[in-house]
Image 1 (spheres, rainbow, N blue to C red):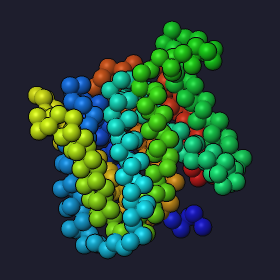
Image 2 (image 1 turned 90 degrees about the vertical axis):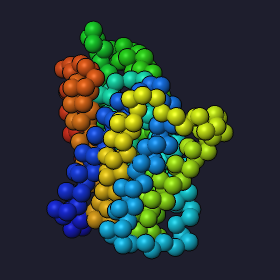
Image 3 (image 1 turned 135 degrees about the vertical axis):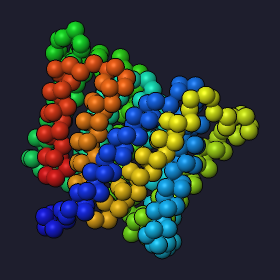
Amino acid sequence: MFDLAVTLPAVVASAACAGAYSSSDFFRKSVPGAVSPALALFYAFGLEAPVLALWLALSGDTHIDAGYILPGAAVAVLGLAANVLYMIALRRSPISLMVPLLALVPVFTAIAGGLLLGEWPSAQQAFGIIAVALGLFLLYVPATGGFHPILVWRSFASQAGAKPMMGVVLLWSLSPPADKLCLAHSGVGLHGLIQLFILAGATGLWLLVQGGVSAFTLPKGAAKPLVGVAFTAGIGYGLQLAAYQMTLVALVELIKRVVGLVGALIFGRAYFQEPITGPKLTGMAVIALGLPLVLLG
């Protein structure tokens, strides 16, 4: 029964994970534009390593077996592509308009289950999908007003970060099941550390090929937000993997998405002067109501 999977430690870990990831969004948005996505991610992944190494040392769980290789490689590929696109999306568009699009991750997962596995969404999930779609529609209502679908579509399409963010949605809809498979063959800390080494190595190699040693130079003002990204994302990733072992992926993802909505609204307004409009607030509220129906249906 689902009830047995809901424990206080699982909820606390999921909420802490969500708060850490929401903070990492703020720091990603704060990285100066002069820092390329590859350079930003190289340092972010590298600086995350000590956090995950400490997690590994404290847990002492170093087991791993050959079954890890395939899902581990899949997680690395998905993670690298999604992180690059995420950096691009947050730079190009307001955080309060990009992060809510992640509500489509469980929607895509549910629809893919129907198309690929014949596991079509239940009536409750279908209602939740409609609610999420309605919420996103309201979110992109133009500031000048006008609820006509064409005007809303133009508002969405005008966001330079929309296309890369949709790529993130697609990639991250595949990631949680792959992570769960990895944890069947490896401990939490070791899995996280392996992924960081792969991602830091891939971005570092790219930088070296593109510009040599000089490509690793950070411009002024980049170090602090990158440390912030690494610290918060490292904690978030570790807590996410731990939460996956305690409860259903759906519950973890639900808490992450809802907290992410609130965080994007607060950080966007407080630090990036992004407007808070009636349609935006209503849209986020409708999304938050629809997500439990999709994820827990």
